[in-house]
Image (cartoon, rainbow, N blue to C red; front, side):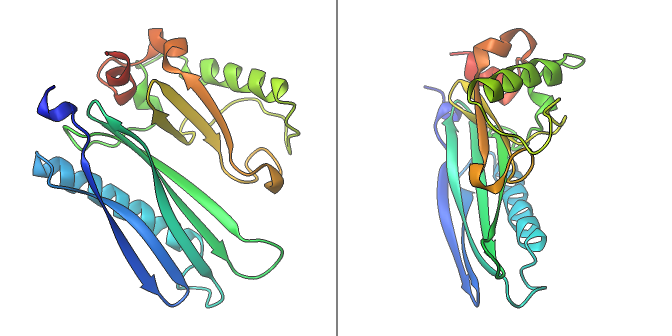
Length: 203
């Protein structure tokens, strides 16, 4: 096993303040250090953006609980989700989810488009699979589903890419986050070989 194939070490940091209970991950003891710093900066930036988007610090009524979930930590690919729940009164709170997928050798964070070969119709391919699943699962939509966004939220879990939608993005709150796992093999012909999804397909 190459050193770089090993899972990265993750440490959980806790921030407890008035109306804030926050857990977030940091990569530690990682080589190269530049990759560690890049991943940790991206994580902290995303955590702070979620806090801002939820109104924490701006609305004194906003109470936030935030945590994370590791989705993949193998083969030089780290994929995780940052989840932020805020309650400011009313019937229910609001939850945001942001996922980050890194090549741990470089520390680069990948957009959905960067998982695929340039010029490939990844939007059309994924949208068709999602549309079929919506129909199969008989999900009642708020708006007709036509296509995913070019930067649709996703994470990698082993040899699958999981496309998901934020609360209210396409369906009512009661549905929660809608997840659509897609086998990487179903998209293999358009996956960029040097992308995290490509690395997961190699073994």
